[in-house]
Length: 391
Ligand SMILES: Cc1cc2nc3c(=O)[nH]c(=O)nc-3n(C[C@H](O)[C@H](O)[C@H](O)COP(=O)(O)O)c2cc1C
Ligand SMILES: O=C(O)C(=O)c1ccccc1
Image (tube, rainbow, N blue to C red):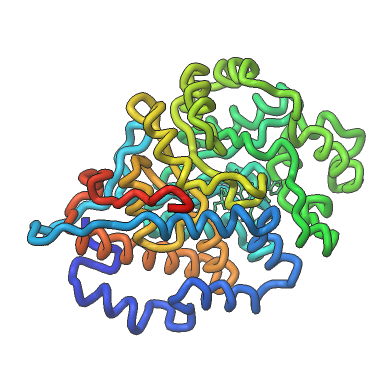
C-alpha cells in the first residue's frame, strides 16, 4: 500500500510537521487536553475515566513492558499494513472501537466517525448505544466495512430485531459485548451523577426499533421518561450464560464475535459455541477495576484459539508500537477507542481522520524500522516478552 501520508517518505514528515490539521496536537496527552477544553467536565470524564484507575493505568504500563527487537538490513522499501479479518482483506490493522453516546462528544457523533472511517478505509464497529440509527451510520460509511456491536438485550425479540436490522443494512458482522452486563462502579460519573443515556442520549437504535416501540404505551417522543425506563429494563440480561448464544447464532447468518474476553477458557467456550472470533479487551479499564491488563491477556487467548477463530484486541492502543506489539502477540487486528474520541471532540470527522492517519503513519514507520515490510510477517520473534512482575 502507499503510506497513510502518501507514498513518499517525505510526505509522512510533512504530514507530521505541518500537519493536515496544524491545530490538532500531535502528542496523545496534548490531544486529550485539547479535547478536554472542548467538552463539559462530565462528558470529558465519562470518556476519559475508567472504573477506578487501576486497570486503565495497567493497560498502558503493560504495553511498555513489551519491547520490540528490531532487525536490520531487510528490504523495507515496499510495505503492507494489510490484515485479513473474518476472511476479508483490509488495508490496515485498525478498526474503530464501538463507543456509545457519542453525541456527548460531538453533535455529528457516529456520522462524523463513519465519514472519517470511510476516508481512511478503516472498518467501523458501531455501538448499540449510538446517537444515530444504525441504518444512517451504515450509509455514511459508503464502501467501507461496518460491524454492529450488540448490547444483548433482555428480550429475545428485540435482540433478533436489532441483529436483523444490522444484517439488512449491510453490516458484515455482529460483535456481542459480554463485559457490560451492568455498568461498573465509576466514581467520576457517580460524583457528577452523569449517565447521559438516562436523558435519552445514545438510544437512537432503540427508539427507532419496532419491537422496542411496541413495548411502550406511548412513543419515546411523547414520554421520554417511560421510554428510558423501558430501556433500562431491557438494556442487559444478567442471567444470560453461554448456552443462550445458540439463539443468537440461529438469528443471523453473519459472523459473530465476542467482545470482552480475557480468560483463555472463555475463548475456548466462544469457539465451542460456534463463534467466529473474540476481542481481547477489558473495555478500556472501564468495567472490572483490578482486572488484568488487556495486552497481558492476549497471548493466552491466542494460544488457546488463535489458529481456529479470529482474535482481535483493544484497550490501550495509543501509538504505532502498540499496534505492532498486539499484532506480534497474535492479534488479527486492533480496535482504537479513546484516541479517535479526542479527534472527534477537537475537529469532528476531520479530527478523527487525522488521528487515524497519524496512527497509521507511526505504525508504518515503526514496522519498517523494526525491519518488517509486511505486517503479516510480524511474529513473537520481533518481541521481547516482559519479565514476570517482581523479577
Ligand atoms: C466513552 C466510551 C464508550 C464506550 N461504549 C462502548 C459501547 O457502547 N460498546 C462497547 O462494546 N464498548 C464500549 N466502550 C469500550 C470500547 O469499545 C473499547 O473497548 C475501549 O474504549 C478500548 O480501550 P481504549 O479506549 O483504551 O482504546 C466504550 C468506551 C468508551 C471510552
Ligand atoms: O460507557 C461504556 O463503557 C459503555 O460501554 C456504555 C454502556 C451503556 C451505555 C453507554 C455506554
